[in-house]
Length: 184
Image (cartoon, rainbow, N blue to C red):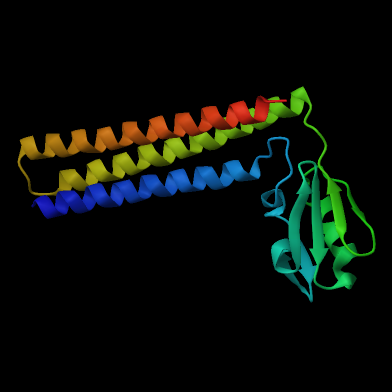
């Protein structure tokens, strides 16, 4: 019987880890003032008739904190890359020098910073919902098991403690991200 309970707890922990990993991935996309290749992770380029991630047709790096350089593997891709960056609604204005596409990352305005904090809070709330959903699923699975009421109560307490730990981790990550965004 204990193996089944342990299995449910492990799978719940795995689901909660997945929610945290997703949150951290989403936070990387929210820019906090300094340039990062991850800012362009969502950009798709038309490449020989199919939509391809920008990172698969070029080298993306940051020569300094305010600049992103996109070096395409084929120079004929420069106009396509520029078009894709403009159409991605990231608020960037790419320039090309014939060799590569250069993006100057503008400093964030106070208003934009507040929007980004709001976006970060929404992502954190999504993660909290995922964690609570994992808790709910675990409790349903535990109730299906043929175990004593005491064992069930203890298992539900374990699930709740796991949930509380992950909610706390989400709050900590959010606090760090907010501070990073609001720092001028």
